[in-house]
Length: 321
Image (tube, rainbow, N blue to C red):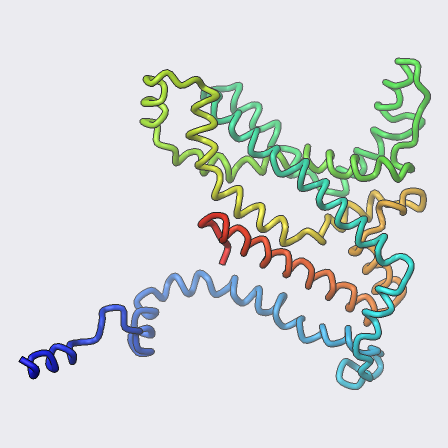
């Protein structure tokens, strides 16, 4: 009996034993077409995202182009200390965070609401027309969008001020007032991106089983109740993933649009980290200082991404990694 027990202890290894390198190589060879398809993407990120990380070290050096990266002297955290001790550092951080949070609060629910509305509409000309009208602004260039905003809000000939004059109000220079900058930036972005942002939510809603709606209708559920208890729960995983990704870019705002809308009179709210880095690094040639600020910005984004992803994992089963 003891011998039988001893023999059973030497049974074959469990099924979930790790595959050998040879087996993995064989499996990869049988799916070589997939690896060929993904290779350009991997190469793109390797060339444009990973190789440039070599230059991050200039954030800890006093970089001089004549000496190159290796020949420039190390200065440690001097550039970071200079930034945090400056009078403008916290203004830049606050402008960046406040603009990004405003954009998140105003822009994140809009595609969800529009997608739910589209899903309730019957297929036909009207639905296709409305979808086309809401998708179209996404394909307009940022330069054109800012040109339209500047033209519409012009104190002399802008359509908004012409309308205000008809109502008896005086013309107002919206683009020159720092208090209006955030609202103009955010709501023009909502108008431009909401329609196209519904695509991913409509794709998620297409997977809803119609039998659930039929059963709910038989049970007497209203359209609003079916939307709340059937459609919305289907969107929750997609919403969580996109929310995590948005928090991962909390310190990143549309650099091109901010720069194009920026002028000396609205700098109090329009000067964000990305535009300051551009001016300091490229226009003033303070490469190491700008690299240090950019590295700090990236570190905050990475930290926020991991933190929100961890919180999401604790509160739900939806995570990026």
